Length: 189
Image: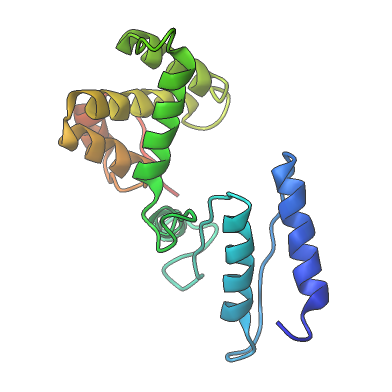
């Protein structure tokens, strides 16, 4: 990190701003061997220390920010595959994040040590997701989260996996998503 004080300071300020509810985006560009990967690893470690969830993806001809032939959803899938936390730094942290969130919802609804009714947990999941109803796929997002919860609660691994597939953008047809999860949209470009 020698000679990178300005860059490190800027990214640490970005992390502080995000911790307070802000947003930031940075692109790290440079020639082969100039230290991009090392620098990103350093920032990733600092983000984990502050309990951030981290996702990364390299842009390639098959993965772009905007496209209409599967390249944009390819980037999204790569980001979801590489979703990481301090306890799961190598990726595939989405199931752990969802289960932690569900546990937090259950704990917030528990009274006097009594676990909440499953319907109350589903209602809270829907209420939380409804805050995003104006966003693209907001309603379907809540439906998929409830499906994951039902799979989690009933031990239905296939239902959980279908919900994860939808969240990762892995469904290729709306028909399949409707059959498996009852949603009418899929994540695409």
